[in-house]
Image (cartoon, rainbow, N blue to C red; front, top):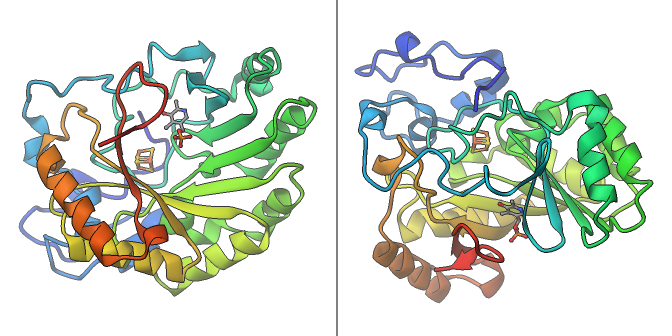
Length: 308
Ligand SMILES: *Cc1c(COP(=O)(O)O)cnc(C)c1O
Ligand code: SF4
């Protein structure tokens, strides 16, 4: 995917030997401020810093690891699971996560927003089995609220749509995006809303993020978190427990812990299945049940995310 927003970390703006505060796009200043200054192993920095290991070609790590190409239902509409249509609303994100499974999908050319959402809305309208629409991307909240409102006004006319889900990393990386216009739009939606945020480490939360989550909950959204299990970022029981506990303190329940999708350039983040299971078992032995995310992997052709 090609982010339209400036990359938070330009490789040439940040000599690898110095982790002094790099020059940043203003959009991610808050995220950068949560990094430990001067620490190349900082778990937030590792998520966004390009490294040489990405250039390695590793067998088994391809370009379309999760079969998005095959599941295309209409312009910008992906359906893999019963009842749920995923709309690729935009290719843009506020950060460029180095492990992202959508790095190689041609989202810039193919989004549901084209022609005022015409083809995407028609695809949902014509399939009465779809009761949930998922706004994904890229990051749907990188679109203007008016653009989102244009979509939901059309979806509201479809009687079989019963729920709206939003997958967004923006409440975490850019909490100021949770502004009055967004909240007003959210609270006026005619459906129950699940907002699945994306934080991989407890340090991604700070008082501004907490406040943004509180505003979102105030607007009626059910907040869930999905994380990706990432070597060097959150692959310890301590880090995973802290993530669940910190998220809950902000009003967010853990939902999924994803095994990495095997996309080219991400192999250095992979945690093998055996260790992933051991971490998950230890996490379950330590935390309240509702603080334990489901450990899953996406397998092409499955009817849902597969528990490991
Ligand atoms: C992950 C995913 C969903 C959502 O799956 P849930 O298990 O309901 O969270 C829906 N559509 C696609 C294409 C997905 O990849
Ligand atoms: S915010 Fe999500 S879609 Fe965007 S780069 Fe990060 S993981 Fe990928």
